[in-house]
Structures are given as C-alpha cells and as structure tokens.
Amino acid sequence: MTALRIPNRTARWLWLATNGLGQTPTGPLELSAMIHDLGFVQLDAIQVVSRAHHHILWSRNQNYREPMLNRHMAQDRGVFEHFTHDASVLPMNFLPMWQRQFRRMRDKVSQASWYGKHLSSDHLDMIRRRIADEGPLSTHDFDTKIEGAREMWKRPPHKIGLDYLWYAGELATCHRDGFTKYYDLAERVFPEDLRCQEIPDQEQIDWLCQSALDRLSVGTQGEIRKFWEATDVAEVADWADRSASELVPVEVEAADGGWTKALAAPDIESRLVGLTGPTSRLRILNPFDPAIRDRVRLKRLFGFEYTVEMFVPAAKRVWGYYVYPLLEGDRFVGRVEVKADRKTGTLTVLNLWWEDGVKRTDDRLKKLDSELERFARLAGVSTITWTCSRT
Image (cartoon, rainbow, N blue to C red):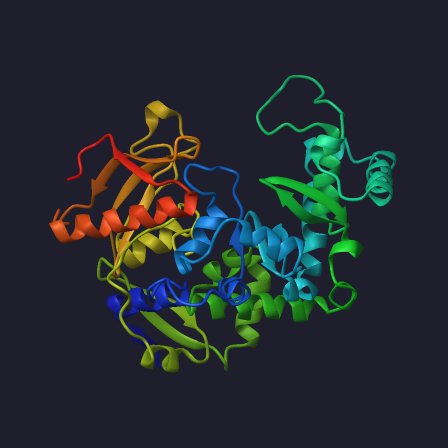
C-alpha cells in the first residue's frame, strides 16, 4: 500500500486537534469526555501557578477550576490514579484494561533494591490492616522513619509499602486533600463490575496499542509504546504486524522538510477531511501537557526545542525553573516564566522570550495579556505584575 503523505502544516493541525487544542477553549465543560479523549492526565505536585493536571484540563476548557478533578475522583469515581509514564488520572472505565499494568508495575518496583528490602509480608499486612480498620489513610498517618542517610528520592518504609500496594492495584487513591493522597482498599474505590472483569493479556495489549494510536492519530511504533508506557517493544511490534491490514501507512513531513514513516488510525482520511485550522488565540501550555510531552515529536513537527529545567542546577539552566511554552495558532512563538503568589493575589511575569523570527506586535502582546488574565483567574489571583521587559 502506498503511504499517505501528510504535509507539515496539516500534521500540526491534526496534532493540535487530536490533543484538544484546535478549538477555542470555551463552551460547556464535559470533564469525563475531555479526560477520555486525552487518555490520561499527568499529575504533578509542583504549583508555580496551578498544578500540571489542573492546567492541562484548563487549557482545553477554561471553565475548568481546580476543585473539579478531585470531586470527579472522590465523589463521582469517574477516574482512578495510576502510573502511565508518570502518576496520572485515567477514566475509570479503562480499569479492566489496566490489570496487566498493575502486575507490571508491581513486579517492577518489587525488583528495585530500595523497594525490595522494605516489602516484608508483615509490613505490608500491617498497612492493609490499618486501612481496612481505620479507613483511608495518608502517609501522614504513619510514623516509620527513613533508615540511614537522607538521600534524594529515599522514602520511609511505610511510604514504600503504600506505593507498592498502590502500584499493584491493591490500594487505590480514594481522594486528595490538596496534593496529599489518601489510600484505601481497591475494592472500596473501584466499582466491582470493572474491578472483577478478567480480560486476556493479549486483548489488553491490543487495546493499549489501538487506543494509543487513536489518541495520536499518527505515530511510530515507538510513539505508540511510549503513549501509555504499559507495553514493551516486542508487544507493540507484534500488534502492528497482526493489525497491518487495518492500519494506514503514512509519511509525515517535519518542520525541517524531512519525512518520517509512521502508522495512522484506520479513519485517518476522514480525520484529515474534517480538519480545520486551530484557533489563533495565544495559549500558555503546561510543561507536562500531553501535546508537548514527547520533546522529539514536538521538535520534529513544530521546530520547537523545549526542555524542562526544574531538575537542572540553577547555574546550568538555559531558560528557568518552570517555563511555559506559548502556542499561537499552529506555531510555538515563545516561552514565558510566570509565578503566582496566592497569598498576595499576584501573578508575576519574570521572563519572556520570543522565538527567532516572531514579531513583537501590539496584537500579539494583547493576546498574551489576555491569556495571562485568564491564567490568573485559574489560580485565583487578580493582579498581574511584570519584572521583565514586555517585548
């Protein structure tokens, strides 16, 4: 079959539409549908303006507000938390297809040296008994201490045990207070009809691959695997081989004019026919937004090189601790460093960088001002100050 060729501009439009960034982020808020279409939303503790999960959802619909996600989990049981490439929330109805990932993560963490020595049956039984008897508990309800030197990422024994049982699917996140996670027995959080379904591993693998491609529209086998981080290279290759008659081979033009071979969802032609250009609104995206998480794909499609520098020593940073990409239409036009102080009600613009070739027009600055005002409302602050040049 001759590969379908997708020009770069069309590929950009397709990628933004696939990620829910093609249209103006207004209108009725359908949180369940939004998370379902994305597949998952990454969680992150860092709150510079608003935590990543809130910012990601707000970017798709700016009627979203921070308390909504926890209500959706704790009251509606519309999502569950687990590990994709990182801690994330996923639609609850995906639970039957996540059973093998519980097993994969259980086996992975049990083999890690700093986990394994703290996973005695007595220690795990103690955690299970306490939660069964007392109800949902957080790490603050336990008092075991870190043994030996305090090293980065080292955890006290109770945190290691809680994490292990959570990875294994024996415990589930019941709710959060701020960003503090409360663990409960999985059978008290997960609906029984979903928790007890037994889906063959091969069917789960096929679903993971196909649903990843649905949410990529177009992707290489590597990109399909990395979407959930719940399959391995051989499993994706086997799925692609068995599904070859249903998949559409494509070649996608990069920003530099090169071409990449990939696979497309079976309905790719109808997706392209119905494609329209993205909104011209200027948007502040989160560093963990799914549209930019794959930095290689980001650079290939948009010619935009972006690195998260929060774990880079300050003296070695090129940009800053937490810098937000600026998307306008189908181009990444710059990046901005902003910080919210909720106590004083202030959003401060610390730095602004435009990409080479981007004009500092009054219209573009007005768009940025408008987005900053909207971003401030998400954080519940009202005053915007600048400590850098506006141009």
